[in-house]
Image: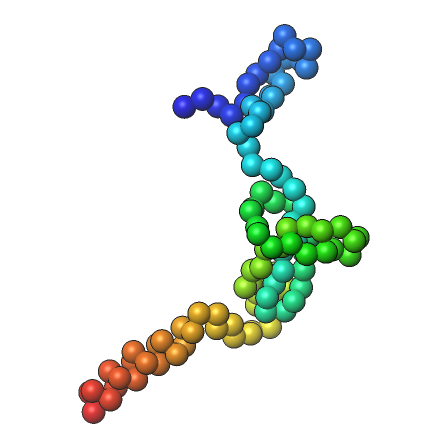
Length: 105
């Protein structure tokens, strides 16, 4: 396996300067991450791919990635306990164990 960088000293960049190989790295760009539980949006750099896009406060359009939990909604960062049922897990649990309880009676 080859490293993703090459050390070039003859190029005039200086001894031991790391130069990344071209055309093997994903595009690193600004992306809007939106917390779907709070509506909070963050503009940060990422390589994640997205089919959706949205306008940011500066008027430019950026790729949009929706997330269920972020620092704006996670109890560790907010200090508040908030129940987030994103996949119907509670109903699934109650169905499974509710039937088991009825069968036991």
